[in-house]
Image (cartoon, rainbow, N blue to C red; front, side):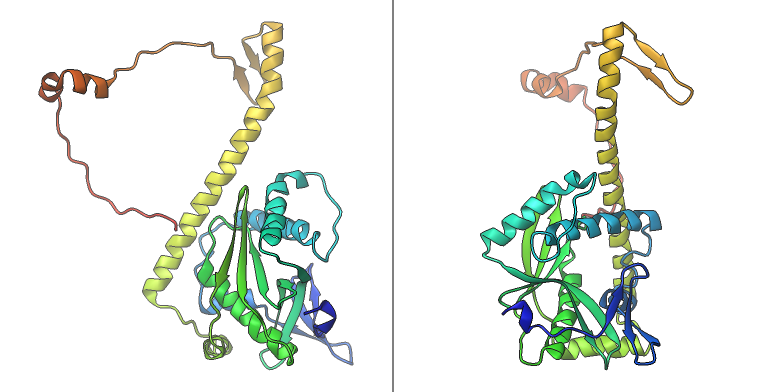
Length: 305
């Protein structure tokens, strides 16, 4: 498959307003909905319900920039900016995933649309075999969500290109030094149409239990993202302190007072630790004699998969 074989959609994407527009002959515009907004309304209404707007905005900006840098190695050039080096691991892993799997991308941000649905979206990547890809930089890869997303794209791709068939569907997950290429199953045309009909009717297709679990997952993801952000800030704090500590040591200063912060060098110290494991092995009778049992209340545990 070549890029020249792909049909161009009449829809225009406005990145500022993040809107898909069909401009009529009289220059009036019709707004088309995006696939992700439909999925959020119908299947995943609580996916980001409890995630703060500032957290979502930071994650979106990070994801967008990683997309741009990765796709620069495909078909959409971009100039390097200050700070882009923090995404070098993701970009390198993207290129390695392509090379190790023999993938050649022929299109990025390929816009597809369905007039009968009033829906348009951009496919992150299309390769020479007609396989469709979506790049994810989220803390956790939600394969069920990507399956729905790419299944919609596949239906729209084939409607826009009647002589072509969408190939396999893949998620490309990039998160720091971690990365993976995951094939996701395609939903049936009937399943996709059911979601469209529910969306047009203003209905959702989730259960109360599903809503509760989705909300919990969203909260857990927000906690994980905030921990990630905290870890990054602590690393930056350590880096910022290094030259300050060096100057303080050189000047023989133990403490620096500032209207906003006090910096103190804490000298090396020693501490004594009781080796209970060794004591138990050498003196099991005494250990048992002085040991007491306590009961810890049971609790419910969550683990992001």
